Image 1 (cartoon, helix red, strand yellow):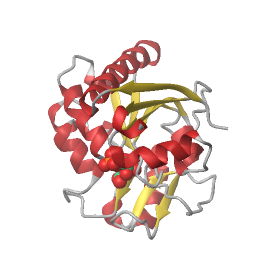
Image 2 (cartoon, helix red, strand yellow):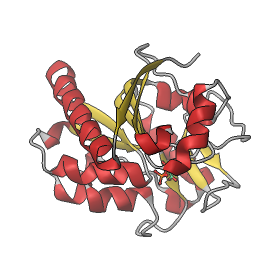
Image 3 (cartoon, helix red, strand yellow):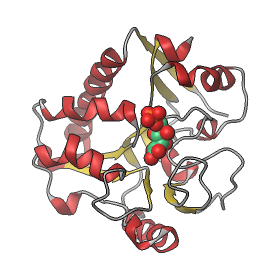
Length: 228
Ligand code: 6PG
């Protein structure tokens, strides 16, 4: 069963972003101190997009950071709707993380081939130190959508018929996203209110399937509008 460690509630999306940025930097510092590197899984979506530019302004040893993605949309590598392009523009192009420490999902190859290659690329990387995830209005997270079934032991799934465009995507599995020391959900905006209420009342949404193996539970960073 999913454990919620804490609901961190803020008045505005900007305050959520600021608090998430602080939390990421704390985890980075601790991971680098304890294990010599920081393995971070990035999310797509509008809420994470507000966090990334804040990270750029912080002081850290970027050479110790390793970047992964929770999901990607099957579009050309430089397409503006790719999660990787958003992360590059908002964050990665502005910091000194070596290119070979940024594990982009090769989604331009199509979902089946990209999932196969990404699985190989990240098999050695887990457990992650920190996973960031958003949540859609239907309770999806990464590209794990309601009513879609995947082999539970896969690390990366080829996703077809996603209800949010584009229909073909690659997603880390619930099992892989759970293989982490800490996990933060970033949720803002009134559109998320119904799904948040369903989540709180025990409705089985994709967000409920993620449960960090470290046992600390998930942390939800949310604004008043999404909480309702
Ligand atoms: C994607 C995302 C997806 C996203 C949520 C929330 O590529 O579509 O990874 O899971 O995080 O849909 O997106 P918003 O924050 O934009 O609502």
